[in-house]
Image (cartoon, rainbow, N blue to C red; front, side, top):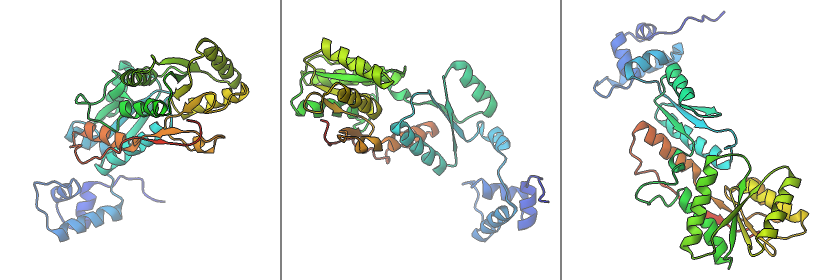
Length: 308
């Protein structure tokens, strides 16, 4: 039977013929110590052979925190954007020897305190936190951010001659919903379009059809819809089919998030692609206090298909 005894620094030191202090310097990659390459390789090989795993609690005591970064994300925020964001966040943290822990559900001061007390994380992030006050970078230079990519929807519809646009919103209560609506309204105002209206596109399908019919009855001059995301856009298209309407002839529709389902829809959905992985990498570097100047943000782009 394999032993369950934890391999220690002392075991690695004995196997590699050096002191415990030297093993600690090598495995912690201490920049203030010059260790001969041959010795370093011998220690690293011994650690691999013995299956040595650094003791997280001891390291947290030395460093003042663990190498865990917690991301709070509310249920209902899961999307192509959030999945890509998490992938970028996780990859960047891993590159700097940190681990991502994703916590789904309501975020409160009490739940955050419990997490901090339990694992002493390096940082606790909230998904979408940079946007919850309706802002991005203070200098307004983040051309690949949410404000700029939100504006792409409105700009594309305006370029197609639409001057009266509505935003279709999800029925679930996400605080990013208000932020996206604000950015869309600011974009419409900047283009001197009619004030942007909005409506909720609920599920199931029958409820969505009723919502769209009611909205069109009270807003007959609206000719285009900028949807909160591709899911809402696809539900809008389904409601249009039920009402015998076609896109873009009766109502142009543009999504947001560039999911694969948009490309599979009939007609294929026009949508906006965002570089969410880079957003996650920026968040990781911000949490670790690392320079972000070499993280390139690719501007969002419209994927033109058949609905707008």
